[in-house]
Image 1 (tube, rainbow, N blue to C red):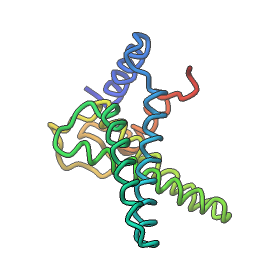
Image 2 (cartoon, rainbow, N blue to C red):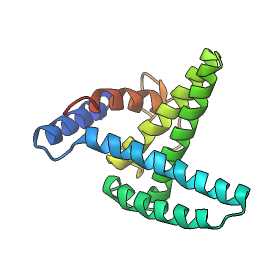
Image 3 (cartoon, rainbow, N blue to C red):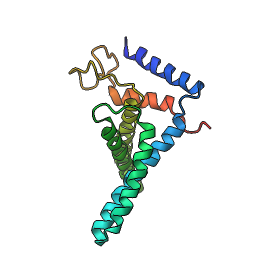
Length: 175
C-alpha cells in the first residue's frame, strides 16, 4: 500500500467516524489544548513553590495533576509502551514551542517564530497520529530521514504528511 493510499484510508476512516458521531475531533482538540494548559499550570505551581518557598503550591500542583490525568484519559485510547507519557510530553512540548514562538513573534523575530510554530504543530500532529492509531510501529526500519516508508515517493517527511492530514481532519470550527 502506498503512502497516498494510507493517508486516503485514514482520511476516509476519520470522515466515516465523524458522520457516525463516533468521533468529535473538535471537542478532542479543545480537550488536548486544555491538557496542554494544565501541564503548564503544573509547571507554574512547581516553580512558584520553589521560588516562594511555600509548599502549599505543591498541593495545588497535585490537584491540577489529577484533573489533567482524568482529562488525558479521555484522549488516549491505548497505552502500549509509554504512549501515555509520550502523549503528555508531546502536548507539553507543543505548548512550550507555541509560547516561545509567540514571544519571538511579539519581539518582531517573525522567521524564528514561524520555525517554532512549525515545530509546535509537528509535535501536535504527532500526538494525533499516535492517538488516532495512524502510526503502525510493527514494521519500523531504518530509511531515508525524510521518508516514512521504503515506498515513499514524496519524501516530505512524517511531519509534513501528518500535519497535512491533521489540517484536513480536524476542524475546530465545526459545531
